[in-house]
Amino acid sequence: MSEKSFASLGLSAELMRAIEDAGYTQMTDIQAEAIPHILAGEDIIGQSSTGTGKTAAFGIPAIERLDMSETEDPQVLVLCPTRELAMQVSDELRKFSKYKEGVRIVAVYGGQNIDQQIRALKSSSIVVGTPGRVIDHLHRRTLDLRKVKYVILDEADEMLDMGFLDDIRYILGAVPEQRQTALFSATMPSPILRISQRFQKNPHHIKGDDGNTAFELIQQYYCEVPKNKKAGCAGLLFKQSGAHRGLIFCNTKVMVDILTRRLCEMGLAACSIHGDMRQGARTQVMSGFKSGKVNLLVATDVAARGIDASGVDIIINYDIPEDVDFYVHRIGRTGRAGNEGAAYTLIAGSGEFFDMANVQEKTGVQMKEYILEGIDELEEDKKRVVPEKKGSGGSDRGAKASADGKPMVLSIDVGSVHDITEEHIIESLTSNCRLRREDIAKIDIRENETRVTLPGDKAIAAEKAMIANNATVDDFLVICKIVK
Image 1 (cartoon, rainbow, N blue to C red):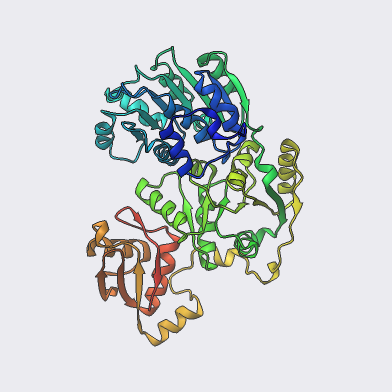
Image 2: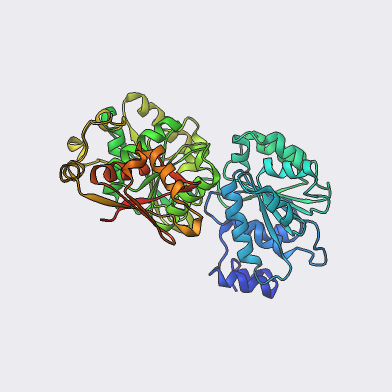
């Protein structure tokens, strides 16, 4: 029997059955190193790249060690930096615990109805949550941590980057001192080590890798582009790469908005992720990304934290990150679970060459040059990135539609199952597309789709505007297209 076989761990039959259902047979490095220590009740610091199986590394032993005679209060607490990661982790833990009768996993995070969370917390085995919402429940006395035996800090470096250090200290101070603590992080900055010294007992430092294993599976390139065509080059690069799902990183929200509009104008199904987006809209963006309706996400580092990046085969650094650790996190979102990926960094001007050299020096990786073809045919960004003024023309298709004046039908992917009304549709079209109520000839609300009949030129403009603005209908982000 292989030393990395899950069967070698002596786990319960119910847990082994769930592991086999998930298609797991051999442990990854971090799992093989961490799980035996955690099963033995020992504290660990686990350092490993994103996508190497950290959730299973702490989740499998957590489920195995639950005392099923205790069903009222949580025994395990998992802290995550973002609501998306909290949702992912809780879903993964449910997958492993599905044959363990009585195991209840509750996720708590902002943007979700707190009354539902309070009801769920009345009987929970494992709580997965963001620091802010966990503290909220502690203050409300709706979460009791006095019986917690095992605490996991997942992606601890990102929690520190997001300013959760004081929250983490507060929460760890609210759980029993006689507990087991596991800390997982891709990088190990000094604040992480100080947390370990304060809250862990003789932890084993587990290195599934040094946080840079992703580099071995990811081809890293730089691409020199003109400043005045940089946005267009990002879209051209995605098209030429043959990638199916990609993430593009910008350093500012403003640039995220500008670049997303440009990519949509190039015919790409792109959406942006904003740190201040409402949860309903953000969930819809990610749903579209997972389903393939959206194949390109544009985000800042903060907004992208915790998103499920499975299946991402290309990362594009539109801007070089100010912190090299951000570069590591960015490219770690491809090349996951043993799959190969590619990361491209766009370089426009000598200043960005110096920034790239700094990244290479600190990561020890030499990027290869990638020659992008077709740059000369691209229009300058300033002609296309800035939103066009009303009446400034448009595509040939739009001009033709306007000339013949024939009505067109716009399909929007929300319907009666989402409790959508005509007023919701009208409000979204008038606010996002500068339409007037009298422009809307007909609204046909179906089960999962709404069809809106508009004058041809206005239908074309509405389609572009809804995509460019990441439009929502009553908090549901919509994907729309002209169907006839």
